[in-house]
Image 1 (cartoon, rainbow, N blue to C red):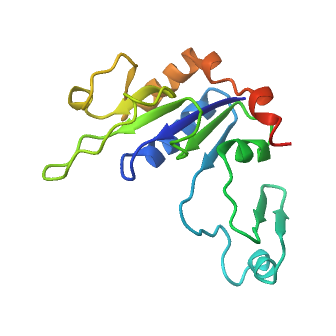
Image 2 (cartoon, rainbow, N blue to C red):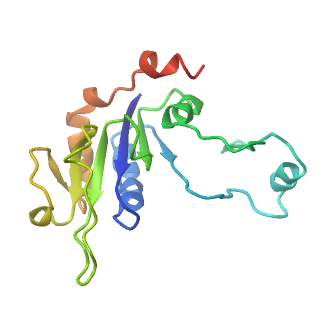
Length: 185
C-alpha cells in the first residue's frame, strides 16, 4: 500500500486535487482509499436514519453494510486524538494507494498544495522550506512560489501529470507497517 499526504491551507485546493486524482488512479486499474482529517464534529449519518438513531441511543460502534457499501461509525466516550497511522490501520489492506488529506504535521511523505494569494489578500506561509516530509509542491502559480525549491513543482490543474509523478515515484510512498504498526495493533 502506498500512502501520500496532501497538505495546505483551507481553500488551497486539496480536496479538489484529491477528488481529481481518484478517477485518474482508477483509470490505471488502481484501488484508492482516502483518509481525511476533520477539525470539528462531523456526521456522515443523518437524523432519522436507523444508524443515526442507534448511535444517538449510545452504541459505541455502528456498522451498516449492503451489497454495495460498508460504513463504520465509532463514537468516543472521551475526546481521542488519533494519528494518521491509527486511521491507516483501520483501512482495508487491499488498496493500492491511500490519499491523505490534512494531517499536515504527520511524518508521511506529502505534496504541499499552494495557490498564489488573491489580490488584496496576504500570502500564507509555505511548509516546504522547513518540512522534510514535503516531497513536491502542487501549484497553479509556480513562478510565484514564496521560496525557491529544488523539489518537483507539479501543475495543480493537471491531475494526470500529478498521478504520473506519483507512479514514477511509487516506491518512495510504500507504507512501512513495521515502523508504524507496532504501536497500533
